[in-house]
Image 1 (cartoon, rainbow, N blue to C red):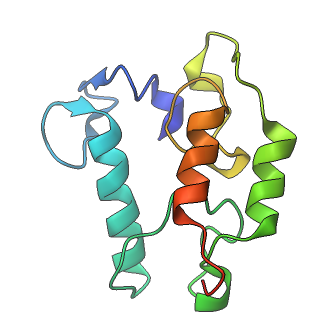
Image 2 (cartoon, one colour):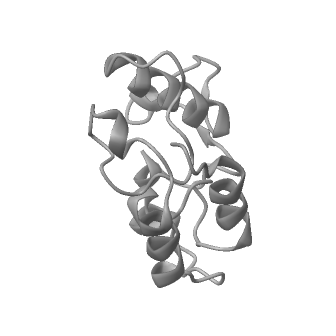
Length: 121
């Protein structure tokens, strides 16, 4: 999904981006990410949305891997790069710690992780 462009600025819906407009408002943006997190969790049988910050075991249906822990923090720390390269379509991507869909991994992404971290999962 992130390879479509800058989610913060929003991406106008076209034939190519239409499948990513999950709220059908003719723009692919943060609302689409929220919908994706909810739909993904629902598809795997969870009553609550997936959380921003979970970088490992993204496709897992097992609850013991559906939480934010030190492995997620370490992934974000390894990939941390607040400058970006000006090309939002080539990453960094979700599994690398880009939780807001822009062109970098910065404090905003860390904040998304920190808000959602839980010792209990």
